Length: 451
Image (cartoon, rainbow, N blue to C red; front, top):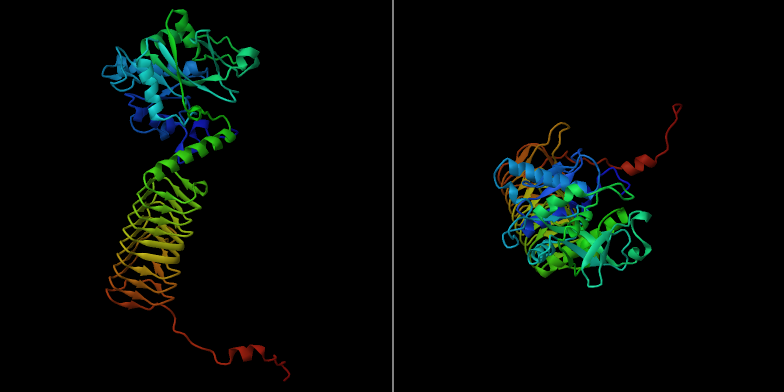
């Protein structure tokens, strides 16, 4: 990745890469989810409540990572409670014992339905393990699945280093997706018998399949219909490709729910954004974070992050809605307007060239072009409170903390520093004076001191 950021913390459409398989596992019905990390515990701060962190003491491969997770499962089970349920799928998928699903933190596109399908396939087989596979046009970088003449899985060969696989094995197009379903007890039996006799000197989890097969246990394969779901990320080129596929899926989900995305190729929407039906998102719009947009809204060529927009709201073009901006029913924010940590009441209009920060604006208020809430005094932020049905003149500045009453007016060009009563007109500007013949005087020649 050529990055100081751990690979699985790189962003995929508004969420760290590692959260995609974590969320998919939870939706699929996992009773317990563990994420394996290094001793630096870089992932601890991004995991949802209830998701556990297991530490892999040394970077000794995928086998070592799974061993660290199993050790934590068993340690908790020994302490009592229901921890022995482990990472099993929900009751539909469980047989006599637990089913342990192993996912990869750098494979973000695998969905809950595909994980559940793997669990179902494993539960309906007599296999000790079921591996997920896919057929790729370009299998480079993936372990190849070797089958016998009857189609049964024999083994998986890694291809990271030249000595790991033969030339014939490298020609195989069916690859290991890096996702497995194991009977819990069978996995525990196999892990201590893994060896590091390979070019990398690591413990490869696929070797557990060889161990189980050597014990006479069956190994099954579950082929993914959509090979894109198993795409992994090892560099920024792959990250961009995966991000594009994830964005396409996000757009499709919204459009099938009734959202009009005029040009998906020119629109960015994060995975946690919520949008109501009959809302139109016009091109060159970016919607980030946990923004919530209601029904029948129109967003034109704007940037929205962690904001709330209720039904019938109109935004843009070229608006910037920052975190905690809330627009109530029918509010309008127009061209080159920025809103931050403010609530605009129902029917409020801020049409042009304005900044509204740390403010509460009452219903049906209209703020003129060039309105500024001066919310920072150099040390602290202060709030501006503007009442209902206020008519703000163009180029008005409200110096917080200040309050403006209902039905009040402000004169154009005012700098409002004192509270304005209900129904009053605030005029806060110097009285105009005209200098007669000013242009003529500027053009008159200067007289010397002698004259």
